[in-house]
Amino acid sequence: MKAVRLHDARDLRVEDIKRPGPPKAGHVIVDVRAAGICGSDIHNFQTGQWISRRPSTAGHEFCGRISAVGEEVETLTVGDLVAIDSRYYCGHCAACVSGRTNVCENLGFVGEVCDGGFAEQAELPARLVFRHDPALPPAVAAMAEPLAVALHTIRRLNAPTGEAVLVIGAGTIGGLCGLLLSHLHEGRLLFSDMSADRARMVADACNGSVVTLDKAKIRQVLSDQRLRYAIDATGSVAAITQGLDVLDGGGALALVGIGHGKLDLDPTTLVEREIALIGCHAYERELEEAIALLPEVQSTLLQFGEILDSLDKIPDAYQRLIERRSDKLKTIIRVAD
Image (tube, rainbow, N blue to C red; front, side):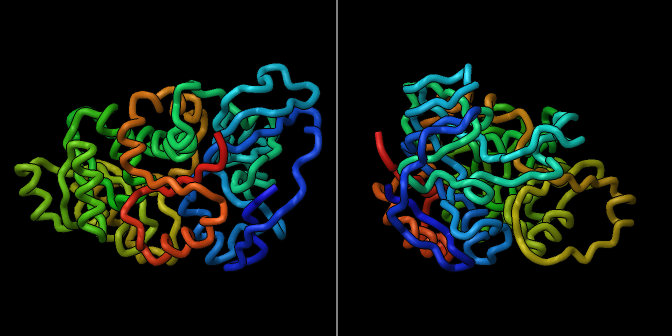
């Protein structure tokens, strides 16, 4: 079968490999229908930061149809249409036992510690596989995982009703945070991005406003309402610093972007202005909730995405995304019906 495998940093190859054999006990075989390219895929490709197996089939945002079920699997059957949980957690460490599977002490991710969705088939533990509405287009079902990341982020931020929220970075996660906020939060939404066109697309879809990271201008847009809550979906040290600068006291900045560098931060600033910095990593139990929300937001998800028709196009798509030559928030590869 065809698969896109990461051999090392900046070494991504489209190859023919053997199909998975009969699934092990507790596992299923998923025929991949669609898969999305994540910013962390690009980060791993560029840096090799999370390469633990060489080669490994990349891709952790995907959906498919179950074609084989191993022994001891009781909740799934052949033919089920499913979305995939990307978190390969152990289930028995102190974090997992407490319900914090997203910070599992042995955490890995599908596409790294096991082969992922940039292939015609994938073998996965059944606990990472969840049914979705059969009416959903594959390109929508493949976005369940990043939607769960966004849902976890806005839950962690926990902005009170009526408070404005600023989303810094109108990429996939920033856009999905805005989309969920537009459905689940009552309050003004602001969006800032280096690409004015991208910020405008997301703002229009979410009934929000485009702003620059300037406190006086933000106050003007908000008619002098205070801005206390923000999400950084860039991972940029400069953007995080600017985000802290524009916030008024008594709120929080949620960090969900993966990036480089270290903050030069005086913690007294956080103390005196009572601003919380909140780390947001993947998700806990939000995946099933995100799957349930997909029908409600699918038209906007399709607006946010571009769909490619072949696994062969993934290496070129990586390069386009690195060079910021895509005008969409998410690149989806359609693999099969």
